[in-house]
Length: 77
Image (cartoon, rainbow, N blue to C red):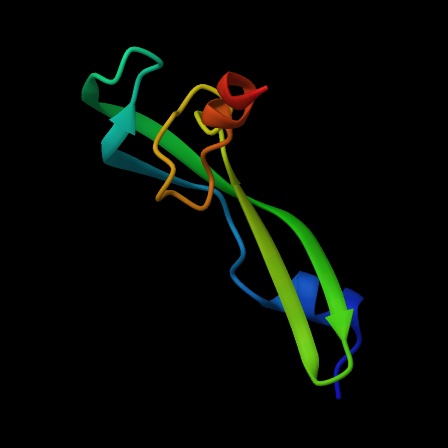
């Protein structure tokens, strides 16, 4: 099996620019925004590897169905 360093060098894990049509503002308004998704963590697991991704708009998004959104977490406090 390849090492983590070999995989990091050979896998095409690159940031991607996308349109998100499900961005939700704090006041509940849905908007289309441009986002950048980036690989954040690369971890070795017992049965392989795991890549965690992050969105540059995640801290401002209040869509509870989005795996990247965390803005809604501040509202619950």
